[in-house]
Length: 266
Length: 259
Image (cartoon, rainbow over all chains, first blue to last red; front, side, top):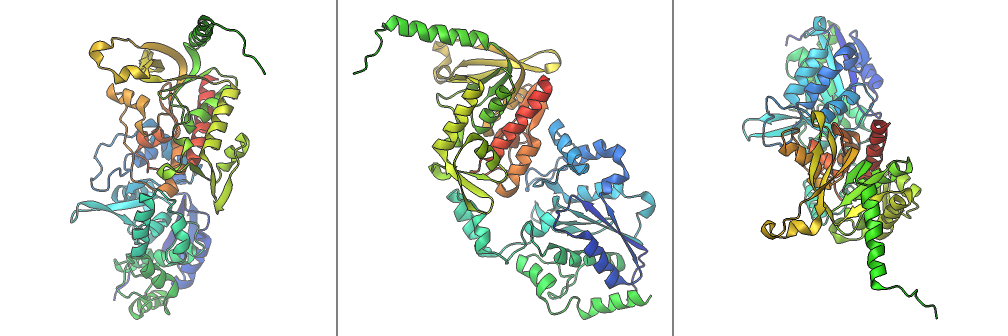
């Protein structure tokens, strides 16, 4: 199979949580990809600080209020929403919980990258705690995502917690707790280890696999693999995610190993 | 046996009327009017009054404290997450840690301490008083509230021609909870468009409520659950940390505006 060319990989930190060690991810990519330069660049908005107000307005206008309705094309944000986004852009706050339209979010992040680096030879991987969802015309609703791949590829640490489904019994109990207005976070102890949580020590290790999905997307045009034991598996359940990223006996399936080998030999 | 002073009925009435009228007259104009005496409104009022500002809290019920008396499911234990225990310590409210970062206190104890602290700081209250409308001046700046007795709203309009009255302040704070009554009045005039609250997401909603607390329109600060309704943030469960901290932020923003 003919694989693409990668000149440089840039990693960005857009409000990712402290437990995500981006330097370790860079080191992992260097190890897996051989001679490719991998650079950690920090906050992507640092490229254009003078435009932070404009981007704050754009981000505030792509918030999803209702998962069963696409966002209005002229969603006028409130002053307070723009101010919140400004603080977020400047890295003054890391709080999260807002849901954004993934398609529009990707467009914004694409705009802030240096124009001369917006091509397939440059892999831009952006780690963020923003949660996003993409609209599905099939069932007419938004679906949470862990990542979107392209220029740049965006990996959401909040998405890793919230998007892949937790065990079925968790949701049944959660419903029960909510009816009783009991604290749902108590449930987490009962299911400890069975899903990725906030402040999870396993986060960096897991995200390495998602960073490789972004790389494979640039190399082959397809970030995913159908093999449940391969780190490129597109997990829809937390147990699948944990198996593919942490428990499988091999990192990559034979096919993807051979792609990576041939890339390193180039 | 101790004996009560010999005071006539007319003296009692005169004392009530005189003192009420004196305070009402004084607070027709204040630095800050807060609508809603729930935890965020009380907290904001307390901190503003502590800083020497003249604060009036308008509450539609006879009782103060809003939902802070009880937690979920009508059970009178209130929960607070770290770091909001700082406020509990400050107010001298006893609590215990039931799991990492989750604290529980007695609702009546917590609520009464907060009310007492607001009173001790110098906050004055107009309870049984309903917020009716806004006073808007140049550039649609919020400058006060139109208020009326709460029972008036329960009677047929045809037989209760009781006009409301207006009171003024430099800053107003909407602490009316999910109703966001003050912000809604701006919305009725087309001056703002609220988003309505989103789905419940307890873990994240508290941070966001505190983060979004601030001036939503010239002269109007929004705090507590009204923030959630205004900005369409995820709904919160029965945990009060964000209400207390949001009240603190609202006071800080108001102090900055008041200079």
